[in-house]
Length: 174
Image (cartoon, rainbow, N blue to C red):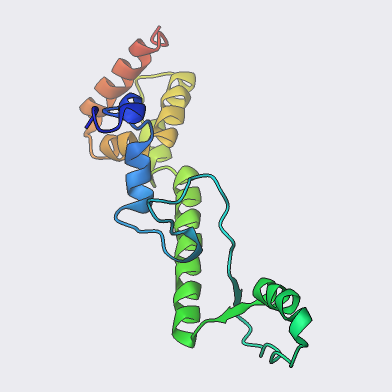
């Protein structure tokens, strides 16, 4: 391969920095419509975008044009040309838009998710630690829901051991 395309040698076996994220976003998607490009088209050059008439308004019919003005009129019509989409395609676009917004909302929600229910009572009911130490541990458990759920499943001795271990890791055990 390197002999066939010596200019591309620097790109062979190069790690893609954000490959897992791109795979999660695009999966097996293929560009279609105005985003699709052939392998012989240069990257980075804009392709003339088509205009879609989603309102379904009729476009005016072309009128008879004098022969000498025909090429100018054709150029103007090409710029204003609209492609109609069917109801099925419109519904598909609507569902796709809603899915994208739903995904975005889910990502935002997971970023600001609440802590595990009952974690405050479970931590603050431990009696072998000062209130400041318990608040320090509670702060950690409120930020790490998975740890908090594990803490809730522990018995009293295990909770004390977890609290002591966490406090000693952070030099808060006195």
